[in-house]
Length: 262
Image 1 (cartoon, rainbow, N blue to C red):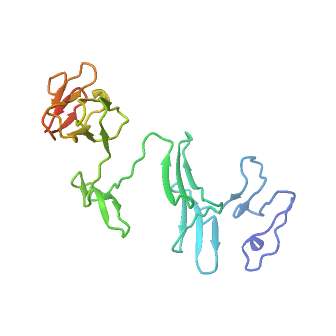
Image 2: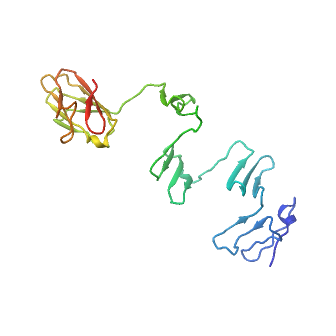
Image 3: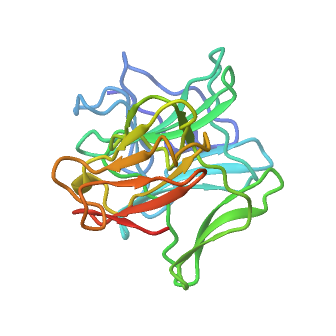
């Protein structure tokens, strides 16, 4: 059975490796065990107990791969400044996928055509957090200054920028909000007709706030009625109305009913 020696594998000017078909074998248990081993699921096996198993170097900096038996953790280490994963396909695609044993995936994609960087998962939850008691997670502007920050110590969000809400303007006689309709600002144009705003089912909207404003300035004549779903109530009533010109109302859901906050 052909093999190559430690000197051949690691020497400064190694001689060619001996190859028998697709098989590579060492003369000891220290270095390479290889392509086409007795295990059909193994394509390449690099063995060096308690030390680096694979090292890539350009003579100045290097990247090492190590699986430590003591901790059971595979480790990638670099002594260079950058680790780059490149997709050479025009337009860019998926550069990295993390997958667990249940086949749930987290995907990292730098798309050069759409100029988008996407992180998404097929699993139920996507979380970003710091385990440091005084830590925080934030979103920053183009200069790296944090504008939205969740602070662990205070259990609070800190927002240091302006806010924009997704608004919806309607002049239809009826507008129905649904659970998946994320708008929080409704501008109702009462200038030509009365309007009914149907609220979504309370059980699916606990904690939701909706702001409704008479945009048309004629709610005194053409009332804007706010109607909860089915037999649900708002401040104990079956419905309420904005009946003053340019009037407004803020409503909050507790998961069972709706409440007026202004």
